[in-house]
Length: 282
Length: 315
Image 1: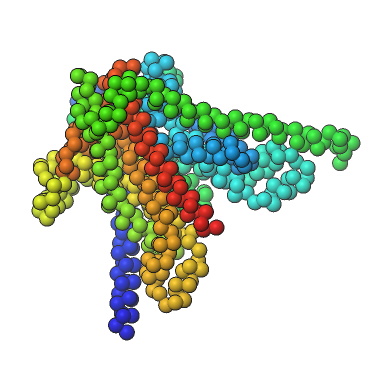
Image 2: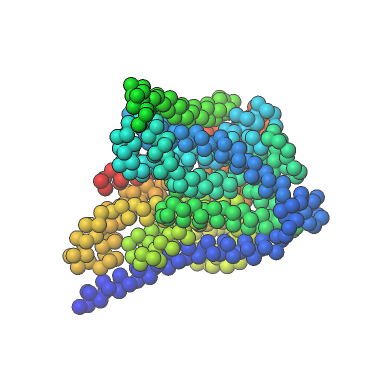
């Protein structure tokens, strides 16, 4: 009886402790969102989305250049990273037995684990150095390289999740492997792959380190693809460590906008996938 | 159908794309090999100068003077390792507690909602953590947490000296907050992969749900849990922005956690703009990148082995 009481007590205490841990960690998200909303909303107005920054010391101005810059860098990253990751994912899912695919899988894991700042060095050596100046394109290539491993993994995973009966059905009708893959398997896995793409974009959208010496930053518009450009995360960093009060307020506003964008894309994609397993850089 | 008239060519037409698809997708896969090889090539050739000049002594040298071209990586390696270990020390117990609660103890509905929230936390960009680190965490540490810690543990060498806010300690805390979601989500999945009959057997013997979890499920999943910790460690080592913003950026090795420090990723981010291509200073930063790359490859490799052996064991 006494022992039983002790065991029950331990059970209750540990349930409470682990539960408290969980609520503590989950509440961090609320703190982050709340604190950014509190500080960011005050500086958020139409100018923020439509105007260029003003010189330090003056109030007003916005971050239209950084919002457009981020969008362009992400577009470039997507065009570079996703096709490679997608087709390589198809390869691993459909032709993926043997030594060579094993090597590809290992290399992809390796690439996935490379710290983002090292990817920045790589993109610098690859693009910025030959071109002699930072550019939207260089930033896009840095983020594009970062998108490849996740793009590959989500594609492979969702293709493998397609029921064998669908493939068998197509094959039984006489379709070859390629026809089966591109007309039956991929359409069946489409929504999962697209959700994976959204998560992937949301992840690199917040990356700052690889952009520091590739897209670099810019106080003005950056027409075309070959000039240095501001991006939201880079401006948040630069403004947060600046000594100007007004810039810091703008950093909060930009942080809030970035956070809301990233989290809502994440939430939508996770709902679309229909389960809450992680698809991070694990 | 009418096409049966052309039946000899139909099967061929239906298979026509096979070699093309194989080659095309195989090329995309090979491209990944090429990119990774190119990455290694650039890191290696880009750091030829300091590797020739300093050799292995680079890793143990502690002076950092770009003007005199004296470079030693020790303060950065030290700062990177210390912040990451401190982060693990905090994040592992908390993260494991969360994972256990979510996978084993919590009711299904609450578990799903909380898991969703914690995984959103993993998506918060690191520059946002840095922003909150500077303006929210550091002031809190300065006014309440650190004075309390110093009052109790002030005799320990790790809590000596003045605290100016930005420090190895602050960087460790912010890293801890950043890696908890990863430990939670990977560990939770590993716990969920433990076969149900293990639990049923323990419960049938009269164990409470905590005893079942702690004495049966967790030991079964231990290898995989270690894997999740190594995965989190690799992330912490490579983390740049949040650390750069709160570590203090001072290349010194100090036994006190309250002193400012520097990390490998932070010095690359901070000093790159001051360097010119091909110059010794930039090549040294590339070599630091190479060191960081090697560190994370090893740690990630260990993590993957642990997790794979766990998954292999379960089926």
